[in-house]
Image (cartoon, rainbow, N blue to C red):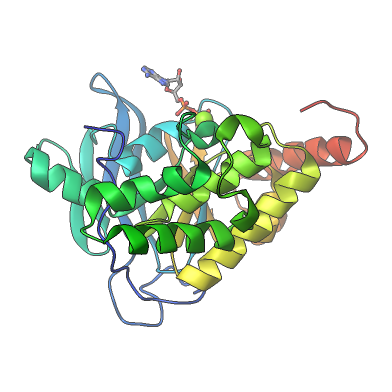
Length: 293
Ligand SMILES: Nc1ncnc2c1ncn2[C@@H]1O[C@H](COP(=O)(O)OP(=O)(O)O)[C@@H](O)[C@H]1O
Ligand SMILES: [Mg+2]
């Protein structure tokens, strides 16, 4: 699969707005943006996490949380279509996306992958292209839009992430925070049903990181895109996520799905309360400038 074998044509879900804690189908009566059913993920036939079941509504921001090594990135790789499920299935906007034991042909696979937008580490921008060219790339590759419309759409996406003035810059000329924003603009170029973010704030200072949080919230409101977010940054989780699923490394399964604030304050699972206490301590230390991370 090419790097851009994942984006789909224009024409998104059209669903707008947060749906809060219901996790059902959103206000439109349409299918969930993303469903994991009886999903088991891992490598070489050996499961890292099993029995994963959740649905993310259109416009919902859903976090995947848990200690280091519990399988957050592994789950995300399966949701990105990069790692086949060991059991169960993933559906995107009501249509099959990945299922254990099934291998769709190349054309079907690329059609599926285009329904999902991914922000890769560091934005994964092409260094030889301007930001405008980077954002226009999936449009050029996967739509029949005329060149003027490709450019217009790419400019619009850059404006949405606050980079209108940097359209002509190269990746080497911008900061890490700007590269993440440009990566977001490119992930959203084809109006995906779902946007996947793995530790988007990694490597950013707290101010830039908070800016990225509010950007994700605004993009969700503007585009109605559902978001699955891996993050261990507590302020970010509490500010951004409508719901979260906690993966337990010890039990190799999800322990609880709920509203982050309620999980922090009243989870029936000691492991989850301990997780939030650790994150709170880390966040307090970071706020005082005690740690470099
Ligand atoms: N490519 C891989 N091949 C085999 N095992 C892996 C691979 N990537 C990660 N793992 C293992 O899978 C487990 C979960 O890793 P990961 O999903 O990266 O955790 P997290 O993102 O929650 O920190 C870990 O035990 C890790 O060592
Ligand atoms: Mg990870």
